[in-house]
Image (tube, rainbow, N blue to C red; front, top):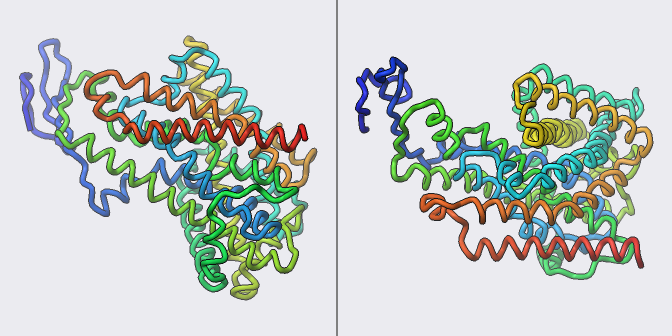
Length: 467
């Protein structure tokens, strides 16, 4: 480690050299070692990717995938693979931006003008339909186990509990419990698949794109909108990466405090390796889970003519597993399904409110204080709560509400993808940053994904509403 030219002191617990500058202030020369890339290092670094995956393993997996399998067998299986491929770069670029620039990608959106901020605010309010649909889906599972309250009352209770958890600061504890339940749920799904799996040739051949079946256009568009998750999760993931303080976020924070920071030559290289592992591991597990949900739905529900809908949605989805394992698995599946959908609800309540807060304080600079930020964050959640309750009672059909929200998410997605590509392309200006740009192949992949989403949006809207 190098030592500063100030009066040096002993190394502290963080490996920092302390000293007193001429003006009497305490300064430090900090050498950031490259993070390790072993198994435990990878486990500790995981976070934003898992958070993004948690928003995905929810309505898309639990509601869209079994419904697609129940209605159309394996015909829409290719959509899940295609959606993950098309959207990959949006999430990778947003996370990479924060790792390299050390700031939220909302800053880059703002450099385009104020309209992206207004777009994000509008999209946040429009997403009320989506959050209500997720709450209804979670409520349908709760009603299946505890029918002493109506599905609508369960949905309201879930929305109120979400706000209470976030305002009490218990987010991390609940998130930890939900992660465990989701793992149990995912394992149950994989085991059910292993026990019920048809010959691979029956479904692997359906991974090649084909025209959607007649009558499936709403679900087809919904699956592209919500798998792997909605694209506003890309800037949310950027904000979560800021909270994780990895990469240049940590460096910029220390420099802002007046310290001199020297990075190990492999500091950014290893940090990027860890971020890619976080994202890729979570992404692949999420994709396989979604495909398995559809396949198991096709195997169990399709032959019986059972389709998840209304308040019976939870019972129908649970039957996939009770038919496989027996009645004893029912509470496990309900708990896991509730955890998956509930984690999506409170992750969105937190992430979307953060986006709203970040956009507003950039539009109104004198509002950038801790007190007003807190008011904006909670105010957005109150609006979502009230509007969500109105949707719950106005459209009490969870599958339809989520499909409607999913198609809306598809319509918004090309703009968000374009903004994310532009953020990386235009803002990596120094030699250090240009060395960390995505490859030309990745840029081509990203543009291909954006164009694909434009084409899919037009195809769904024209076919569904104009033909």
